[in-house]
View (cartoon, rainbow, N blue to C red):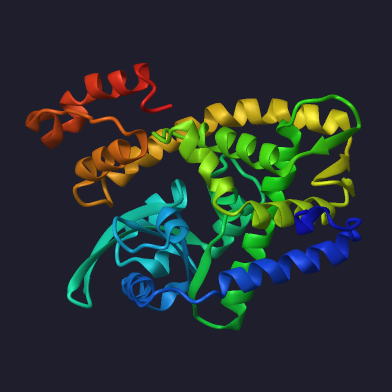
Length: 329
């Protein structure tokens, strides 16, 4: 029996403290030297403005350093993070900015992409906001590879805690049923939730790939769901075998579903604008985007050299084909 269902749910304050301890220990788990070396290279590019570096994504999940490592860099503010007013303006107007970096390490070459958020914007997006990118990623396992000081570390941990609570509450609202009390299976909560959040972006992951997020650590996700839901004063939670019985206001759940229907459309638009912005910050972004699509969808994406060199002029037929074939959703 998963630990999540082994006992009656604690009160909200106790559950939040337990969830915070779980996430803090998870974030503090040591990382390979290669991951730490790349984090150092990333923060060095932004000088004293860097507050914390978070590592997440498929390389963490698979325990590898091949491919492209994924990071978030949290900074004090955008003006201090760049020598360019233009980049600071872009980051402030439509966070995050996304960059690509390569370094030599231990006789090999490491590759990474990283997103830049101010601590303030990251915390705000962890609590909701116009799209799900922050809370849908950081309810998953992550590592706090580096932090500037104790305050920066505490702020990063608090934001990850908030992201996890936001994700659990939102995903609860997407479960079927109109009764006040729902029987919540952790697998259903997370797989349905991840499919919804990934579906709000222009991404090429197949359903099986998304479902593997939960399958990689089912006991961890069961425990996190139990604590995150119990820490929310809007819910009454009790154990029910391997599941949870969660009582919540059906009107709130209906309103949350309606709000998500609108936000999902806005999120796709923001994702598209973010991809356009990335062309200004990401070296050779066309090759990277094609590699990413092929890797996640399992389908080759053929483009001509002219389309590769001038994607905004000649690449629209390829984009239309990818959307029509649902390689991009």
